[in-house]
Length: 323
Length: 286
Image (cartoon, rainbow over all chains, first blue to last red; front, side, top):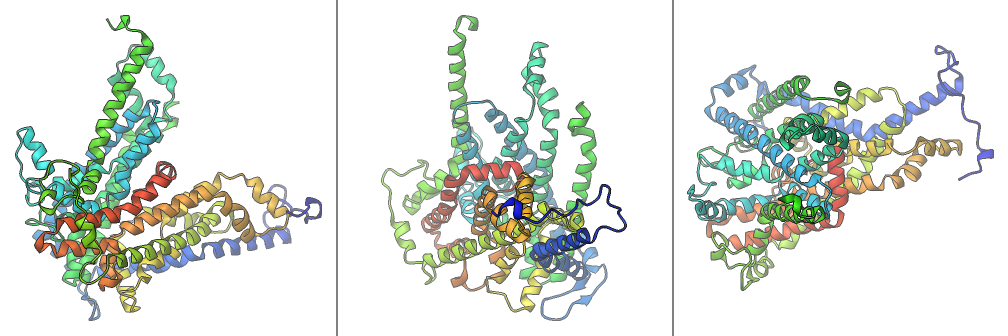
């Protein structure tokens, strides 16, 4: 670094006593320099945003109102794609499958994540090891390898089937059973509870010890302490996890596609929304219909997000409320 | 009655109980991973339905057969392709996301707040709204069956998670550092390159590892954009195994699954601290 004494004097601080309307020339020059530098540093992101996010969003909104097969130019059809959707039994089926996947999978996953986080929250030797090991499935869960493992584990007369038979439950293979295949997918998402778990752990570590000590003095049971202290104190983290997991679950694709043998079956029982979108877009080359489907997904996820944000006033406690 | 037992001993008994409980849950959770490893060493007929986790007499024929490749393509091709894609992605993310993160964290330019809200908005945007027009765009540019569609976004900072992660990290670095550098006559490029990047190494490592693993696991991108098997990454190579399952060659499939998991698990073991902490502080998805 150069000697501080030879460095140029700092430019006068902006604001304060300097009149707002006519800033000193160096300050103005500096502000312009800052703008230029800012936009130069942001330029990859700006190009990416325009080319790969904003532009495609507008294009997809337009395509949603067209009939487009990728080769002929798009033909404007108004709301036809949307009206067709509601009378399309397979579309309705895909909504049903995805909704039940989100509604069953997300709460179970969060419950598992919270339960294990509570287990690991106590200071014990090997805590870091457990935390990392439980996180591992979250990293590989979306891979084709794991989807293949899942198919094998949940097929007829395989490990899961046989283990359940020990308890006198005979369900057969889950993958080939229209009533059960969705639960195989739910099991796969619950298995990846490690990601929300580490976020829960970070939240649990913020809860002040004194609260528990005071409650214990007052004779509060462990369950009571959980409901009256832990849950309210971690509710912002719970909200964050719920939001993230819900948005994430709506978009399940690879695992459903591979677990169901790229057929999203049997009998469309594994037809998650994006599987149908992929089929319409790339198998049937109905890009307009698929775009309309994508926008329905966007609107649904937006609505669910809005409802969650609205609901948080009732159950999420931020620090300010406590004080 | 429990009052008669020495408190210290009671504590250690509870601790043992806790470890037993945690290990049982852990064994259950890691079972699928051990299963795939064990099964890759079993003869075909024992893979589905065989109850012991590891075979008493391991066979290596599945791995040996993998060396012959699949559909005339050596398995190593898939791995080389995956490595090219993964390292290409890492380079792109490190370059573009750190630039944007620096601008958000340290440059006071007009419109910063607007751009920041737009970036946060893309975090919550379902990717599926973009795939159709992006596909049409790359198709018009005749870039289907190249790696450009899979890599371009990485060089244009579309992974907002990493911009956010690096920005949070930079914000926590003391302001005095840049101010001192500024007094010495450094501009933003030099502050970024000589001060911020070296100090951000933990955030850069976290982002690199996540990018590598996500790229390695990616399935939808290659499924859409690649159509020649010799360009396939590992995830699509695995799909080829599934598609030709008439003979139910579970052994080859499982052995290939193990090979596909190995790099991810190796990275995980080497960098698990960064990964777990990165996930906990930023809410990254695995």
